[in-house]
Image (cartoon, rainbow, N blue to C red; front, side):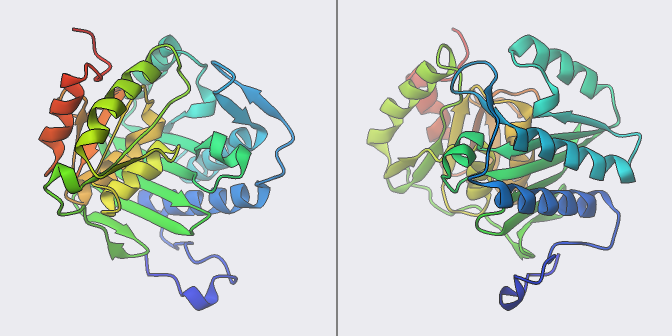
Length: 294
């Protein structure tokens, strides 16, 4: 993972790693998928929806997931893959797929395009997210933003990097001076009211809120110190698995919105530099914006 030569960017591929270890395969898959996604922006021909008119899926999402699957299974044919486009919409289908995935020693969790709505509209904030869970533990996390050509990589116990340079969460300890990210998943019935309640309660207490439309990139930005915290109710494992490891390996903290330890099944996420985490959790509880009843 050497830093790329910025003068040599047109002579791809700067990310291709000769090793066939787990991390190398994840980096290669994310890089190839990201380049293809970028080449397809503005050319989407088939646009469909899943749970609602807001929950978009394109032929690019499906094609990219198949590409990533092939690249992973070529090297690790006995590994399991949990991908967004291979799971039917709805909480029940997700629960079933996750239960099946947990049975495997090696489970890859893939989001081919996190930020599909942005991709469809040409809003340049989307990424490829690939994580590997080994024996129940998040072990590898890779997020690639093809628009900015930024590759975020984390390995459990080995830190996190962007272009080979270590990432670190911010040092901000004052909520009033913090910039916090949040999101609005497609679910307008359950998730949106909770996220809106959090927004209304937290915004007056901090410097600003950003909602870019990609949970994975928001988590990568917490890891890189670009935002001080992030929360969102109503996520899926592929939205956040890789990003969670990036935050943890960059010195940050990730829990559910009640402050409980993160698990790959956690759907209501709070991530921060650790210094404003108590504030974030307390605020969500005060606003009844945790996504949990009671």
